[in-house]
Structures are given as structure tokens and as C-alpha cells.
Image (cartoon, rainbow, N blue to C red; front, side, top):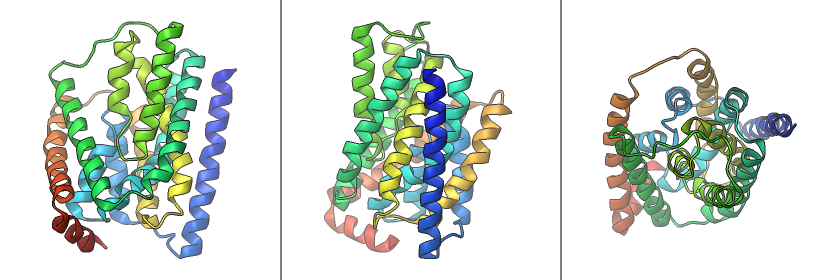
Length: 293
């Protein structure tokens, strides 16, 4: 019953988000997708479905290609990847069985965190955004390295948690939801927290994808009306991402993910260094903003 309600609510939220995005795009005359965004959405969401995450590689590409001002990156991430993540969640919540009450509680907590975080992000100064996103990229790179070196917690076999650990998971997801609106992906901390609590690592997938699928459209609805927004890029990422998710989830059985993670580490660290250097040196931050407007 709980899972059915979650899936129904998720489908409705996805439709609401599609309508809102279409209305804004048509009203602004920006309904034609950015073609580079389509390719970016396809690649990043394909690997997101396999557990690598989409925020770090998308951030790295946006920065390296200077597609948007640095202060726009968190809004683009949440608004652009929202719909593909809804599709991921609809698939994995059905495929992987986990305690429905834990799933619902963590999703609710993450959405509340996003509601708290979104108004803050749209008002953050450029250097603050650069610093936060730069640190987020370094944390993501560290998570990739830890995974490749088998340093991540192995986890147990549980698909539910006793009350004290249940509360820890819910509190963690509230924090993760707030951080998501700043451009810090939820996948890596989820893949650390839940196994540490003794859960089966596979259980992380419906929980982290379900949380993202609810909180990203919720925060995205606010971000779409922000001045820090490229609607054509968001549409492109969405259009490229949805079929890529379906291919990855339903057709792909195995890929050399370890080698891929090492490549992502190199790109992500390079982008993080550029962002942090801009954040620490005001002249570079202003120049970087001007170059991408």
C-alpha cells in the first residue's frame, strides 16, 4: 500500500513538473532543447542509473565547457536531472524491495531538506556557490576512489532498520536533501550511510533514487523560475536522460565501472580545483562569471 502511494505520488509529481517546464519554456520561447544538453543528459543519466551519480560529472562538464555561470550550476543540476531520476525511481522502487515505511520516511525527510535548502541556494553569492560545489566535487572524487579501492562499507543483509537506526537514516536524508539543492549529490553519502547502518547495499538504490526523484522536482519547480536558469539546457538534459535511464536499467547487464570511475575522478578533481581557485580569488570568480554569461 505504501509503495503504491509513493509510486502514484511520484507519477503525479513528474507530470506536474513536465507541465510547469513546458509552460515556462513556451512562454519564454525556449522550447527547443540544447543539443549538447541532450548528449550530456544521456551520458550522465546512463551512468547515474548504474550508481555512479549524475551531479559530479555534469558539474565537471558544465564548468569545463563554460556552458552556464558557476552560480547557476546547482539549479541546472536539480532542474535538469529531475525527470530522468523520476524514471529511475519508478523502476527501482518496483525492482528492489525495502521496508516501505523506511523508504517513505527517508523520502519525506529529503524533500523537507530540499524545501529548506532551495530558497538559500537561489540567494547564495557566486563565490559561495563556487566553494560549495568545488568541495562537493572533491567529496565525490573521494567517494569514487574509496569505491574503487574497496574502502566503502560492505553493509549487511538488512532491508529494514530498528527504531534508533531508522531515526539516524531519516535525519541523514534530511541533511542530504538540503545539500542536494547546493549541488552535492545524494548517491555517494547514501552508499556510505545505509551500509554503515547494516543495510544491504542494494537497498540504497530505491531509497536514494526515490529521495532524489521527489526532492529534485520539488526544488526544481522553484529553480525554474529563478534567474539562474537555462531552460533549453534543462530540457536537453531531461530529453537525453530519460531514454538513457531506460536503456541502463532494463538492458545493460555489466560495464567496466571501475575504469570509468577513475576517469571521472580525474575530470572531477580538475573541475573542483578550477572552482575552488575562483572562489578563493575574487578576480577569477568575477572573470569566470563574465565569461559564461
